[in-house]
Image 1 (cartoon, one colour):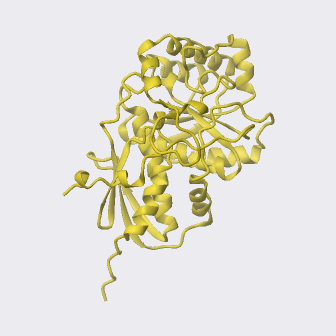
Image 2 (cartoon, rainbow, N blue to C red):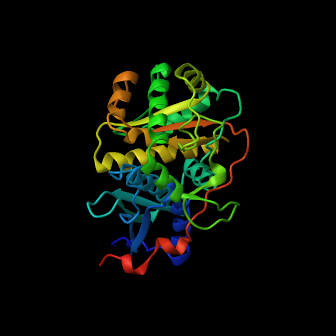
Image 3 (cartoon, rainbow, N blue to C red):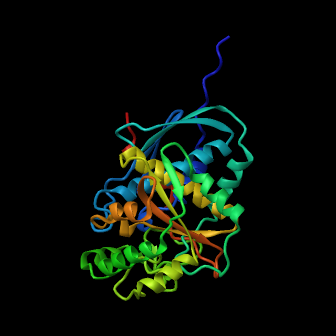
Length: 325
């Protein structure tokens, strides 16, 4: 007897997937993705109309964002009690094929429930190191084929590079105009829209942790190195720098972030320095990284709570005009 084909998801179940994807982190909170359900397949579509020409000239961060959304999508499918398979066609960021019923693991549930609690914490952390066992769990969550998550060594070199990048970005008028356009004044726990809330930006932490603006102070390299040493930093690297590598890096970064969230930690991502000419090559040579750096993740215990960033309505993730035939 032939086994029944996997059933398509219901409208309510698609809503659950949409809410999970909508909560993924993205560059400047642009939310550059759409979902196209087609029976038992769901395409995660990269929104090419969302451009950050100064911050993200080649769309690398946009693909990292889509990778983070993919992690949330897969977790939501699993929590619904379904198996799934992921492919990477050329015309979309990823296609998730819904399979037959399969019980979700305890880890899937833990990470899924962390989705709604995850925040971009661009402020200083509470003083105190994260226990070694917790750091190990956070790092391990991102390790996968072709992706490496490492704690950077030679912090004096990293401080020198980040200090240089901060000064360049602070004086880049085009970058500053773009950042201002994507800085919003919405706030609260149910804000609708996109962009980075003004209240989330701060000069308390590392110069690049709160996104660099014209008034961002730049400490000297020695002071910055000491501040880096007081943080928990990870670099997400990939073996290559293809489209697939970038999506994989974003997916791994979100698993790292959700694992940290599940353990009562908060974090934020640094990517803007990596777009400066020659910066990534210097980072590899100076820090001895095992691959191409795609993002720097800082995490710790929060000194103050962070409100969630605004989100576009879930219905906008499923525009009928975007469906493929």
